[in-house]
Length: 280
Image (cartoon, rainbow, N blue to C red; front, side):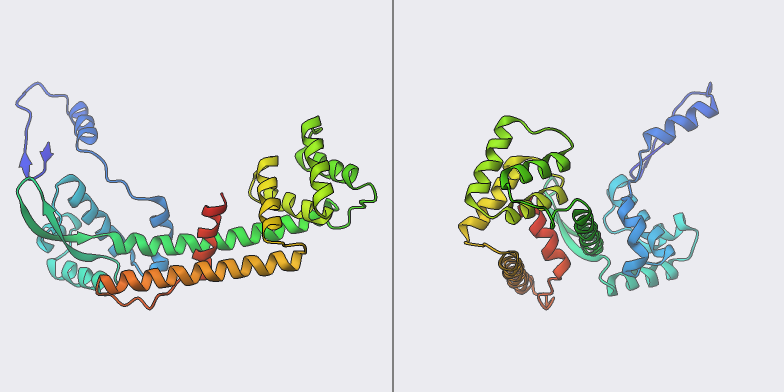
């Protein structure tokens, strides 16, 4: 069995080779690779060979505590030559997939260099955010289409509280309690029915079938004097623009502090994802 750079061999001549293999298989540990990375690595410019190389770099760091393995050591486990490893590492560095950073060993009080995987997972998070924002936008369109089927937009509200109660019961899939009916009657007396329906739609979209969440939406609109769907849409677009601008400014400031120039790029998709975190 190998532990770090140290070979440890069991001194026992009565060995069951299958059992020994099983013990080593478990005790030598595992190298975990996120499924998200496996799914998107080709989209961020990583070749199949480089993906295997990254897995070995992670294994060296986790298992052997070797932060900056020699190309010769890597080539040995990949059955290739050191020149190929040097070329691929240089390419990964140039594409900003990995970096070389300084690390501090507190126990030995030394500073040393090692490969840094933070750029890799930053790129993976960008792809994830873009994909998730697109999925959420698609789901919103589906919800809007379903809302039409549920007569959200064409509901007849001559008897406004009764119409709203019926809509809520249809969407929740159950009769409402007396307290919930009272809450709807209170909303009906304070705001237009279409605003209550719009708040319900947004709650359903986020999987929050509860009156507290719907009430928080209505109170936010009331606080900002938003009385039409157009005004609500404009308010939310301005909110996202302000958040995106703050994010870009912060990123520029962080980049200047670290001696980097990333141009302050802050995509609409990531701004949208951050807004969900705040709302959830």
